[in-house]
Length: 451
Image (cartoon, rainbow, N blue to C red; front, side):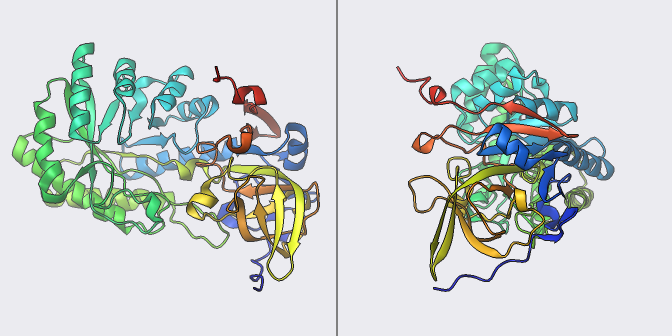
């Protein structure tokens, strides 16, 4: 078995700039052969804080939220950007989202608890999930969240009962599955007909369930929600889904005499994981969704609802990188060259789960060309434990610091303690300063719940 051809070199100008396009955090540059992000030397940071290590470019995070807010406000004034916290969440991220004027989407009681513990306004929180427990719904209603996104008639009954017990009327959205199949991995398509999420549009089920929502005395139907999938490059399905939602909005107004105030169009654009990826822009996403809304509302003669969008991955993924130290080198002639690092599927399950692909560089050799083809494997007891399969890298040596790009979404969120591995620390970098925002776990942390 011959080795695959190397990918294009990662470095065009070794003195100043990495040439990986949209894969790079926005402040990334090379100085004296070392990779810098947020003005911080990644090699020095790795030596000081240890590896594996999650690092976030704080200015990158902030700039992407601002970009979404500006684009949607320009095309549809009054729009709301709701950061999807499942992509990455800790108290520092909660505070950053609040400071940038975005709202927060939570998909579980722990995410809501984190938001509240960090002082996030509950009236800017939206609660998601296809099987929210009664306890989670109780916590959401008691906190006074902005809206709960209903996923079923069973959940409707639970929310109505809990709201009645609290003496409130809870705003809700209905999540619909528009039957639109997005061009993305099957595991992260969420809007097709065969989905565990939401009220199906087949046989008018969602439309008929509106009557149930309106009969409930302690909920108020404020909006509709849809989510067709994640990591989407081709934006046409968003327009198609909006058209389906507007048709439902018009029918609800005709039959029940109520206006739907809000339409949540779901997640944001896909992001570049590889140098050759060419994702759509935030501006294109805002334009396509809002133009479709405007056109369809005019056609059906209904008032345009307020628009909400829920970017998560496209806020945090590229802003985040993971640093590792090379521990073992192993070459199998004619088969593969393995570079083993001090992390793997416990801090990044996406490669094993989705066959995700990433770009990587050796941070202490960032001005050198990536002439080697290697598999960047982890330290865990699984053959499928790898961060990058057959990717390009500079010539590796023991002790090198490897930086894997685009790991800011779903890596920390989906991390585990497999093989007794403590989760890495999280560091925010900005203006030459690095601050630990989540400390590294200890062995004691692994056993803290044991009796």
